Amino acid sequence: MKNLLSILIVCLVSTAPAAAVEQNCRFIQAKADREACYKRQEEELAAKRKPEPPRESTTLESLKQMRQDDDAVYRSMSGICRGC
Image: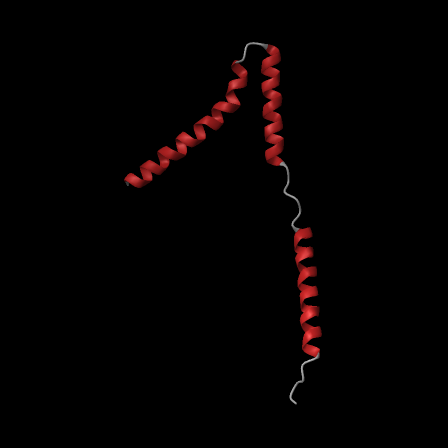
C-alpha cells in the first residue's frame, strides 16, 4: 500500500510542472512577452507532434543488405563439393 501511495505522489508531482508551463503565459502582463510565450509553446507542441521518419527505408536497406549477404554465401557454397 505504501508503494502504491508513493508511486501516486511521484506521478502527481511530475505532471504538475507540465500543467504549470501551459498556464504561465496567461499571467504575463506585457503583450509582446505573452505572445512570445504562446509562440514558444506552439513550437514546442509542433516539435512533439512531428511524425517519426518512416521506418520503411531502414527496413528496405536491411533487406537489401541481407540479400547481398545471402548471395555471397550462395556463391561460396557453389564451390563446395556436395556428396563427393
